[in-house]
Image (tube, rainbow over the protein chains, first blue to last red):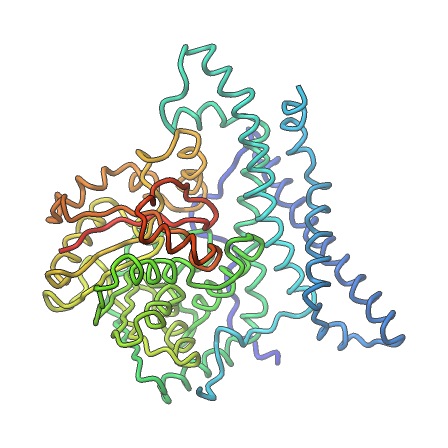
Length: 102
Length: 395
């Protein structure tokens, strides 16, 4: 099914928000966040391949695309993503952690 | 049951698309729970004490907290992450919707042609879509509620429907079901006002109908209507309701001027609606509600709590959306004196009510019942769907 007829826009109408003095930092933040997502998805793909190899020995691309994690596996993946985001963005947590310690 | 394909369940993301969505859900959970906790710690342990040293008092409102927080690294980082997660929510569902759009449109047309439950869909291209919607993509959702890209388009309805699932997919209170606001209000009314049996119900700004459906479930005898200005959302909502066996009546109309006869509805409601509307329009809508509500009827809207009822830090936290989420009326709406505004529009003060309703699906039934029948409803905060603030009036 590739009868794509419409391209939905990616840009939201209205001024793009900035949070840093230098808007380049905002742009970099967006790029890093997107990269973090892509790496998370790559993890998921590897995990899918590993689990299917464990189970079946041989797999196809179609098998991977159709693969649906069960509830237990989904919650393991959720836990992994949660910890992963915590590690990547740990800088946001550090100041609060040191204030809590002091 | 009908054999109409359900537009609400048809879209199939591929492996990577699905996992992008899951990532965004968990990212939002981290932002709104874990990192938000860190930001509050920094405020309490550093920013507020520094403010007190300088001014000899604590910040008096959300604006002062905001000013003190604006250049804190934690606020810059947290805001960046939240802002990007908001955009990524919609981006994560768009590709699969683009791919399946022709099918979705066909399914919606089939639902309209078969119309098995006897619900209805009435579109009116002459309805004025307010400027705040055409000029700003609310919630940073590209295309907003109203944009149509092709004939009989349902794309924005699908982006909203599937996107909101990703949006709240990591939050523990919200995972259970769509329509959490309406199921909470409807079940609350049934327990708190068992004698109140509305025959005709209106949900204003109903979007794709997620918070319209539960009224039909709790009051199956009632005629349930939803209005919105966004045609693609209404088409999608009607198609989904028909496939799920809920007879709902969707109509494209502006809440400021609904076109319904006087004294028409027993119950009028909305969820997360007024904070997107300007204050002058809010008052017009209150007056319109008074006009179309039957004597003895009830108007009860779910909204963010007014800033007078929440502390300065929480106001700063909630009002983030006013500055960064394309919701320009948010802060002014929350700043309204609700009882005065309702009274100004003709709702007598002794008939008004403000109730905090626990989220029905995530609250133990005994506790929900105790709150509904016991009265102590103002004790909890609005927060990630744990409890819903509602306000309104009997007529």
